[in-house]
Structures are given as structure tokens and as C-alpha cells.
Length: 63
Image 1 (tube, rainbow, N blue to C red):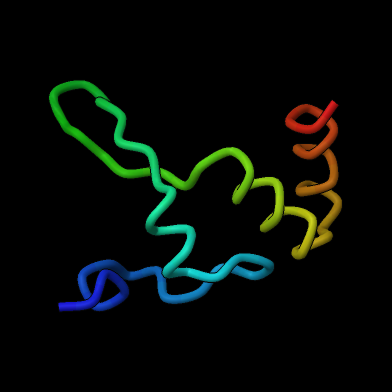
Image 2: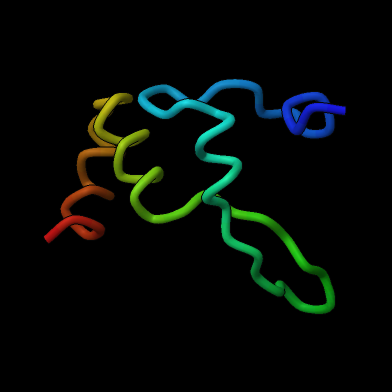
């Protein structure tokens, strides 16, 4: 089953899903292991979204 069928997220503006899925990070949150988008893909997605809150996040993420 493709990754996009197992998860609710099927597209990320500014990022190719399959590529981002391959670069995902595995982190532990409490007792649960979760997968999160990598920093570079977060930056690309926030640039593509271009909303004020994303631009504010970019200032913190991309010095």
C-alpha cells in the first residue's frame, strides 16, 4: 500500500509527497514513535504557503 494511502496527508504545497516521505524523521513522542517531515521540507512547504504565520515561522527556521 502506498504511503499516501496509509496517511491522511496526500499533498504538501512546495514539496513532492513521495520524496518528503522518504526523508521523514522518526521521533519518539512520549511512548509513541511518530514520523515527521524533515526541516528542509518544512521550510519548502512554508515558503510555498506564503501565509504570514508561515513567513514568521521561516524567520525562526531559516536564519
